[in-house]
Length: 434
Image: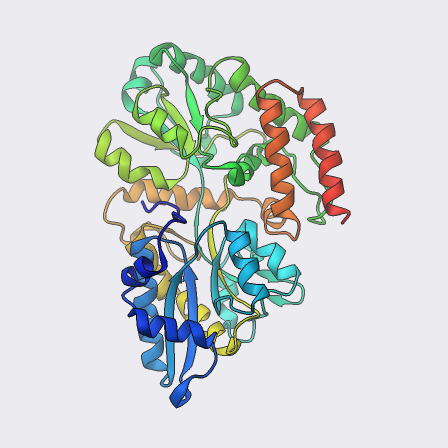
């Protein structure tokens, strides 16, 4: 699986990766999306530093240009910290025409006018091929500010040898997923086998603290209320979810080196690969390394559940920025990239999970691990609309930072679940009141 982008790739390097000549790309950039000599309309598309994806976008861009004489499309790479990078370019009116953006980032820019309504270019039948949660990522009451291209989520990975030693057969169907109590009981036995810890969780940085929110929703709670704006981490269900997470560390089932704000990188994957844990809740990005380092000794089961089901909301949408001098043309490019056929090819080439309902693992034609990829696709149906609306909302970037602070304090035992809830709510209210 591809990994998340490194911010360190130099501009000259990413232009080479994208197959774009330095002179031509800089000319397009200098044009800022304006019409250049000869009437050429320049479009810039920004993506993460994933070579396979850059190649895929460029292939689609070349096809788009062939169908739209008098245009050019340059594929660029987002560098540095996203918000700083994007805000700086918006302020100079030099943001790319098309931006690849996460659900957790889109709400802020849709609300402040940095993204434009592209509903006029999105075919009406697109909506029918999206679940309500996935469509809600870009849709607002006054228009469509992005189209979800691909997703990822969390399921349960396990070490086959460890499961055999504890005498447990992991579930296969979503309906049979381990409940919280079942998971903790098995985790205690797994800890005895590894001699270290039982499981890990797939945070990758403080910015990914939100990946823990499915636990709140699995317990019948919610991060924000039904209006998508009112903090609701003070309900009994939310507090009980915090207490569940606290048990992980209080009982030594997970290491304190594996928290959203500590450890760096994907600590859980490294722990899993070195045998220090026998299970992990994580996304598809681990698959390639597991196939290389421990082939035939890993398997997957559905994400854990409690009174309800939920999983992490990963992936990216495509949106058109207010800097675009040709927003209608840029919106056409977004519609092309998110068409069923292009999404199918993009997910095949990059090993991503499709956002469209009509695409399954067989349609994508993954090179390997088809059953596991289908498990991820099926798990995506458990992502709740209320969580999607919260994470793609206007204030989520700031709310996520608050959540990271108090979640870690609770998991470490420095605050009780009730205390963490109270202080988290106070901080969240100060964010949404602004």
